[in-house]
Structures are given as C-alpha cells and as structure tokens.
Image (tube, rainbow, N blue to C red):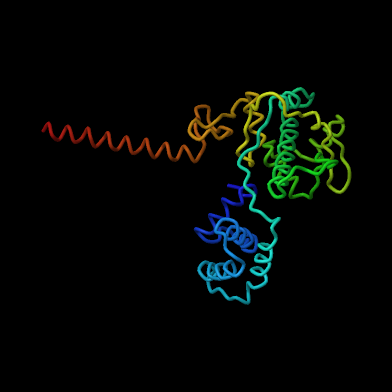
Length: 275
C-alpha cells in the first residue's frame, strides 16, 4: 500500500511495529507528528520517546549518528502547519465523467486526463487538509509540474500500457488536440479539465490511488476490468473466470481449503463409525 495520502495510518504502523523502510528520516518526521497529534505529547516528551523508539528499533543505535535526522524531525513537530495527511477517498461526479468520455481521443488518453483530474483533486484535498481552507482566490489549480518521477507516477497510476510513451505520445497528442498546453520545464496546463464540473450524482468513489485509470475502464465497461467480489477493489483480471483480487483470493482459497478438509474429516469419521 502506498501511504502518501494515508500518513496517519502509516505513522500508527511505525509507532506500533517499528520502521517500515530504509527512509528513516521521513518516518521519524511522521512519528513525531503522530506523537504530537495523536498521543498529545509535549516537545520534551516527544524527544524522549523518539530516542527510546530509535534505541528499540535501530540495531546498534548511536545518538551521534542520528542526531541531525532526529533534531530535524523534532523541529518539524514544532510547526503547527505540518499535519499527517489522511485522505481515504475522492469522489467523481457523472458530469465530470461525461465530459471526459465525450472527448475525441482514445481510451488510454482519456485515462491519463482522468488521472490528472483525480491528481488535481488530491492536491486540493491535501492543501485543504493542511491549511483548513480552500485554495486562495485567484489560484489556478490546473497547472501540473514536476520531473521524471512525478510523470512516471502519472503513467503508472493511469494504468496505460507500459510501452506507451506518456510524453512523446499521450501528452503531445493532447497538446495537438488543444486539450492541454505544454509550457516549459516539465509544466503543462490542463485547461480542458476546467470543463469538469462537480454536478449531478457521484458515480465513482476512488479509494485506490495507485490504480486510478482502472476506475475509468471499469466505468466504461472495458473487458477484463472487474470489481473484486470480496473487497470491491477494481482490478485487471488475468483469467476469464477471475472474481477476486490477489489478496482476497488467498483468503478465499484458504477458507475453501479449510472447508474441504473439514468435510473430508467428517466423511471419514462417519465411515469409520459405520465400521
């Protein structure tokens, strides 16, 4: 699971189970905010708990080796504007989908635009979460900028084919169609998304921010994209008779195996009694 928008959940996991990755400075920051906001510890108490935590979970911990990272994390805890982001879902309205589906581009291009739309909504939700207000008046939220990492992430979460080039093919095609504008230094202007209005019914609620493009595929009835019958996660199937995502299938298979074993034992037990 990607915890970019579920920092509170991730911080709680760190607190209960120790560091989850090699990115200790980042996790220290989340842990400090968790100690402040959830456990309501004062600065001195946070400092004590952080060093206690590091002693417990970092092998051969030496204070001097981690002083800078810990001190930086503790300073972040003094900034009231720093908050643990927790965004569990993003709603999509029928009018927004109707507009994207009305565009004269193929399904993969629509998925990229749809992903950008969701990303803009996520950006706004994060801003509102951290600052307790909407974007300032006059702020234009339809710019997207970033380096290779950000664009690679857009390609990944839009679920377009690996061989398809996001820049050379999709973004250039959308620019030629005057749906977006390529600016400079990795910046684009998504002006067509201004036509997406939050009107009518909510028809999609996105909870998996790692597979945004699949939601549009599912909504449009694309073959091979289904909703898991157990957890309702949108997935791309690997077989015609697939009903569950990988995680749920493991659980279902385990339950079915348990029932088969139980039934076998009951049958054998009955036969033995008959003898």
